[in-house]
Image 1 (tube, rainbow, N blue to C red):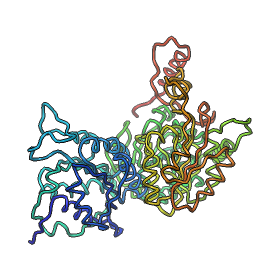
Image 2 (tube, rainbow, N blue to C red):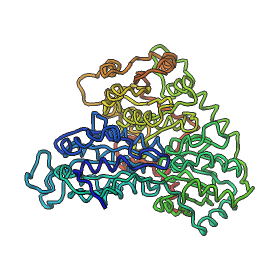
Image 3 (tube, helix red, strand yellow):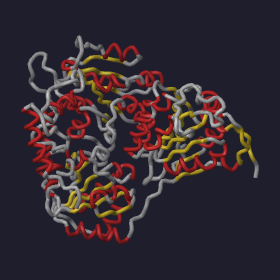
Image 4 (cartoon, helix red, strand yellow):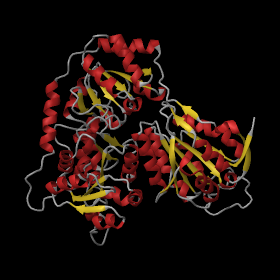
Amino acid sequence: MGTIRLTAAQAMVKWLSVQMTDDGERFIDGVWAIFGHGNVAGLGEALHDVGEALPTWRGQNEQTMAHTAIAFAKASKRRRAMAVTSSIGPGATNMVTAAALAHVNRLPVLLIPGDVFANRRPDPVLQQVEDFDDGTVSANDCFRPVSRYFDRVTRPEHLLTCLPRAMSVMTDPANCGPVTLSFCQDVQAEAYDYPEAFFEPRVWRIRRPEPDAGELAEVVELIRAAKNPVILCGGGVIYSGAEEVLGAFATRHQIPVVETQAGKSALAQAHPMNFGASGVDGSAAANAVSENADLVIGVGTRFQDFTTGSWALFKNPARRLVSINVAAYDAVKHGAVPLVADAKVALEKIGAALGDHTAGAPDAKLRSDWLEAVTAHCAPRAGGEGDRPLDAEVIGAVQRATGEDAVAMCAAGTMPGALKLLWQASQGGYHMEYGFSCMGYEIAGAMGLKLATPEREVICFVGDGSYMMANSELATAVMRRVPFTIVLTDNRGYGCINRLQTLGCGGASFNNLYATSNIVAQPEIDYVAHAASMGALAVKAADIPALEAEIAHARGRDRPTVIVIETNPAEGPGFGEAGHWWDVAVPAVSDREGVRAAYAAYLENRMQQRLVD
């Protein structure tokens, strides 16, 4: 067997460049890099030499580069991914938040932070975090709890085992998530005689686990016996490519479908069995069928508290819970009857076993009444002069100005709940990072989404709070000419949390809006000028009609457009028919009457929680 002498860094990039999907594409699309003394001489040199066989892109911040990579993987339905490399120290720890985001959302990303010298000769090196009790620890150990697989490369031959393990994790539908390969900087530059066979192209297939016969039979019997079943559609439906199968299954067996944040747009909102969003930010139609359900069939969901109304939503005393999931960890949550299998395979096999069986058809009027209410709520109000629009009006304006190919995306603040509730998505027309709800994901994520789906119109909703946290990848998108539209809603602070503080928990407005923070002067930030300074096409929309017009004008441009519109921070997007209680702990003792009233309501609502079947 022949060998080839390479540095460890050269070997890593050469190997990554030939790892393929069964679609004939490279699984790792490329590498985002900010170089420093921990990776510039090793990985930097290797990436330069490999060229377009594994392209390198420069970002502005390690965390947001990783957000771009994660969004790319999400939009690619986990069938492709990106790598991100940093120096040691702050460059590495900047990526820890992104690793947590990918871990929570079960999304593949390859993180390659530089590390200290394995030989320890120059210890302590610049930016080294020393553990006084453990000489094997570095800053990169922060990645351990937020990585699905972690390895430290302290010898060149370690790549022979750690790289295949990394790929096996990122392509495993049950174990998918972030991989961290902590790459000691001296090892990156060391040479080794690698087997030539190691660099032969390899195809990685995404497996589809078949269901256990006993579990399948039990689930089929539960569905046959149910009078009012409901399907809770999670992101696993989309990652499985089961959208069409789910739609046909729901129609044939007359079972309504309700959506999680990750599962929204698996079925278009126009699908007659799509009853809309579930839970805290849920539709009146979805929550009505969920409250009445005697069987909740979760498909590809981890049953997050927003989805379940903190486990107070499913009120039927006869309720049973089924969980169809590739991950056994998720399939047994809250006493569910598990069916560990790929979503598409599971639905096909359940459907075949059910034959022509139908449940009692859901009340279609619930759905039609809800959609009428959405249209009315998103229509422009007849406000007075200077009256700022609500977030619902902003959503309505964007919806009217876009077509079937539009994808609405967001991550944190008011808009995730408002969009889940009100955005009428086409199939695949929704991208939300709400597992970690990470402020600052939005702009970088929009770039990753557009890179993965260049044929679609990408609309990024971001509040002024998230924009202030992380906006620098806007410059990257301009430089790379990646076009998408940012709708920046300016409500002068953290309006979402201010409403939770005051309306939800009975507290005083404090430290969320600029007006109630400990400041000397109210900031007047010119977001248009700021975005324009990075090269974006930026405008301010004075009102809802102007916003609609600017959305249309942005279409077809070759770089990002930022549209700023001032919104009302006091009034939320929800209204009486929608939404559900959310378990946010309220102080048991307070001198404030509003807090005492909120605590009494909290105790009453908590009595409705049913944590285990």
